[in-house]
Each structure stands twice: as C-alpha cells, then as structure tokens.
Image 1 (cartoon, rainbow, N blue to C red):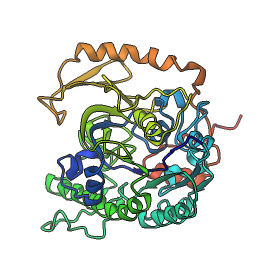
Image 2 (image 1 turned 30 degrees about the vertical axis):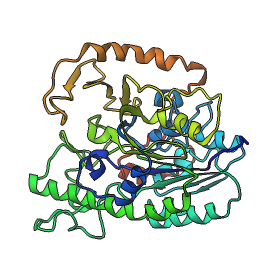
Image 3 (image 1 turned 90 degrees about the horizontal axis):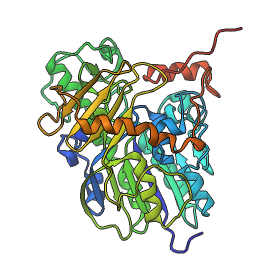
Image 4 (image 1 turned 180 degrees about the vertical axis):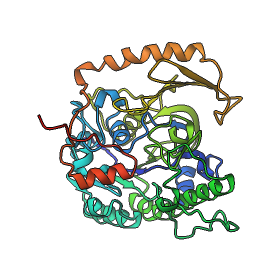
Length: 415
C-alpha cells in the first residue's frame, strides 16, 4: 500500500443533470453539495460519454470510452480486460465497498461488482430502487467498520424517473393541473415525442428538481463520514431530457440536458475553486488515483484534471441499438451525427440551448475522424459488445429494466 494513501468516497447521483442545479445556474438547491464544492473544486463543464446508467458507470469507473469496455444493459457486464477503479484500489490494499440504489446497477445486470469486496445491491431486483437514506446508512455502517484505507462507491437513484418528491409543491406551489411525475400520467408522453402543454411540462420539471433537492439532504451524513483526509467525488452518469421532442428519458438524446453532469471533487491538497475546462467522465478515475496517492499501469484514456483540459469530448447513444447517435464537442461548438452520416451542428456560444442548427464546424468533423484511431489504440483491451440473452438477468428483471427505458436485447429465437 502506498504510504500516505487517502481513502475515497465516490458518489454517483443517477440521472442528475447539471443545468438544473443552482450550482450551475438552475433552480434545484443543493446546499450540501454546494458546501462540498466551496471546500473543493467545482467542474463547470463536465460531460458524460454515454446516456445509459450501466454503461456510463463502466466508463467512469474504468477510465475508457464505452466502445472500448463494451456493455449492453442487462447482459451481466463488460468483457473489458483492463482494471476498474475497485480493482485498482483493492490491489493497493484498500477495502472496497459499493452501495447500490437502483436495479440498473444490480450485479447480474451490470457486472459492476468486479473488484468490490462488498457489493450491496440487496433488494434492488425486488424493489427496483432503494431510498438514498437507506443506501447511505449501509455505506456508513460499512465505512465505520474499516480500519485502513477504503474505497466506497455510493449510487443514489432517487432522481431517476418517476419524479415523486415528498414535497411536490416545493418549486411550483401554484400548479393546479393534473400531471404528476408518475408513469400513470406521463406514459403517453415519455420519449414518444409528444410534448405536454408548456405549463404542465414546467411542473414536471419542477418535480424532478424537487427530487434533486431532497436527494441532497441525504448527502450530509455521507460527507461527514468521509472526513477532511478523504478524497470525495460527486458526479452523475447522465442527465434527463425535457425538450427537443424527447421527454423524461435520456438514452436517445445527446443534447446537453442529458450530457452535462455535475462534478465536484474535494481532496487533501486540492485547491478550491471553479474549473471551466472541459472534463469527461473518463477523466475522473485518473484524477482520483492521483489525489488518493495511487499509481496504476491501467490503459486509461482519460486525463488527470490537473493537466491541460481536453480539446474534445466524445459522446454516443447505444451503438448496438437505435438511434445510434454520435456527438463531438469542442470549444463553443458541437456536432451530432446520425447513422446515415447526416449531421447537425450547434454554435454553443450563440445558441446554448441547441435550438438553431448550423453547419458542422471543421474542427468537429476532424475530431470525429480521430475518434476511430483513439479507440483503436486500445484494441488489445477492447471487448466486442455481448449479444443474445442477458447473462444473469431473469425475464422479470429484464422487464423492469425495459420499463425504466433500458432496452434489454431479447433472447435469440430457438434453433
């Protein structure tokens, strides 16, 4: 074990979109996260590379792009040959524990238990989700039993659809309509391209933001548990869509509401402040390893965020099923490509909401061409996307994942 190694608490706020947070200019107040940011580093331009839960978590915890680690929701995990964050920590003498809030990261569905001494996903198959307070309490109990360096990964699922906060009037006390945040009222609109009337859509957005604020309350004991000598990371796998003809889901959108995620890091020796450089989720692992005092020979694609920022961010929807979109972002510009090669550009300075398409900027087209060589450089570690029935996922779990918007490939027809 390296001398002076620091313990790590890594928190993932599932489906939390940065633009909705007050920290990023939105409405959802998150005072505990804001307090952590005040004593640490707030990354204002952090983006996911993938807009589904299991695959995005594989990306952040492996430090490589989705096409390298390979995964399909519900198939039992990645075939990636490189190490995960948990495996790196455990090889350095850390105790490793994961505490899971939603069925999308259940071990049979995601395979993300690799490298964890404890992978606490008890009950998520039966209940689909566990309240954040329960997940945090289990993490605290485990943490307090450790006597040496520890790595705790805490996954909180409360902000994921449906949006049913305890106080539905928190950000919209004057609403008198009939829409709530349940599937019962939103089923006909969710990802079907059928918008709600503007006033009702605003209310549903307010419900989502109330969920985020209530989720923040559960973070206080987690941060207190960590202490000042621990590396603490809070981020998200992806955001949520409330526009662009796609509602209350994320897996088929590469607009910023689904790509822009919060990222806050507090660590011993890390200067506090805002960092406005581009950061991808693949950059989090190498940053955490440096801050914790750990080294690795893993083939990480991300960059330590203490180094100069990335010049481009790649993102994609599931390359193994429709709509198979691909995006490249660079300074002030973004392009989204469809499978037929057609592309839509956006000037993010003049049009941050991505409402007025423009021609693709030359630097984006060039960056897209570089993507293949970037991925192929890790060919020895790549895994083909598994096909066929889910490994370790029973039909009931597959149905639950499908209901949440994570399409699980059906079993092949009998031969």
